[in-house]
Length: 279
Image 1: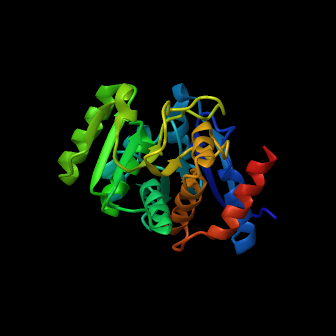
Image 2: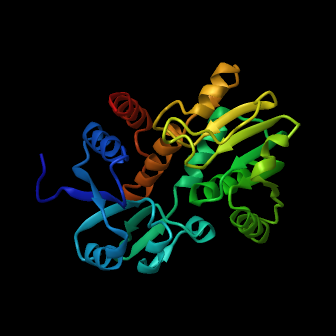
Image 3: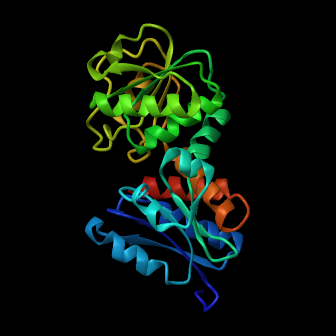
């Protein structure tokens, strides 16, 4: 039951038809006895400035931010967490006691949590595909996890080059670059991580060769739950994972900013799996 005391939260981005955050947060509010509601708030990119300024005057408890606004929103916030400053991106907004709007990024801890949960090896090569916002969080998480050798490749080489330079400047870690056409030439054992959109259509695959040297395949795409890349891994008996847990953990970490405690991971995961199966 919505009342005058119901806390208002939501997701801003565009488009939002694919997002399942609406379902997992509302189910978790209900299960946890929290008087709150979570709404999808699609904003056309050309209207973002006016729309977000308007949102700041509404009694909103907190927000999540997705593409294409994770970087754009920063200029409208009063301060950022150290993680958001480092990544140059925000996915969680909350108010402090002085009613300031603050930004944080829970993608990095969300992905790092899954690495630790999987207990993936640190002494093999990690080959990361892509160079977008999600990739940035993944690379910083790998550095924090203690991975010793990271290779990065992207269809636009210059974007990968810029990202590798950023991490060198911020962390003192050398990320080795590979041209996209040469990514399959890695001959040592490796963990493959796809952060690109290839696979969202259930047809495209970022990998054209054998996976015989892969010890684990991680695709950040969670819908479809089994992309062509993950199907390859499954057919070759290689352990694999999609991005659903990262989605869940970044959502659960958002609760720490909004309510002071971690969101109910099991409930979120159960609801997410239910929704994806219904798609």
